[in-house]
Image 1 (cartoon, one colour):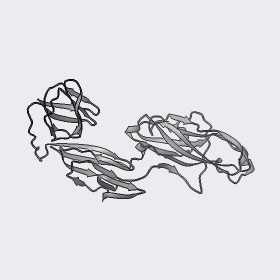
Image 2 (cartoon, helix red, strand yellow):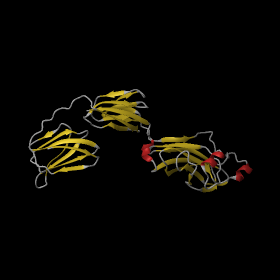
Image 3 (cartoon, helix red, strand yellow):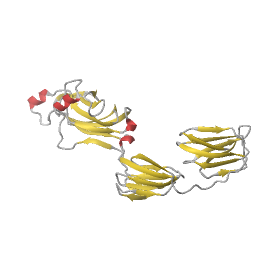
Length: 330
């Protein structure tokens, strides 16, 4: 019996067919195959690939599971199936875009119908097999391809890539001499209001994979009110519906006060939700230090509060570019 099916990742297909032969005619990735006898006991439990043929099994049912979306074609029955190699000439084209993340990752999976692949990367990229590895930017068992150069491969096995070992993305950072944060006393300001007050913003580009999902941002804030009794309540404002949205979400990571005895560095992780695309994040101090102006405090800018860094370790935000893939397939 010749069977053709389109299956999704995680699907389990069960055919109650008696026979002794199993042949995988077409499959773009490995299949988990379990054949059972009339009592329901497994007589074989194995992975099978395109072109494999098992005989003399005497089964009553066959279960097939896939870990990826694919089209499969297979033969079940008492009569043997003679597998014939498919033509090497491609009959279809598939294109896709793959985000290039930090570390070593699989670029293309084992896929026998793949005849030829053309790859373009916006960043320098190392290509290799399962033994591709890196440590602190030193890459082994891979070949370097320069950015924006077309790469042509005729391999249908697993293909891996590396572009960076970066594990932290910095959206904003400042060093000495640092610019103090401005004051915002409004509890529900709009984006246009903050811009009119000269409050700077940080751009956060959110990929589709994180659209309207919670992710972490790490903020580092410095206070320096040495010798002065002062309170602090920094605020983070970010656009609710993208960079053009006037409505903001307000977040107060902490409040503190007392007589300062030097530089105080506060590190906090905040959880935010933003739509896909470009978003804006504003930072300001909400507690006025009017007595600092009168005293002419040497550490006073427009406030005693300084935003030092905004960063993230979220893997989806460590994407360094999008690779363009075109496959010729049989």
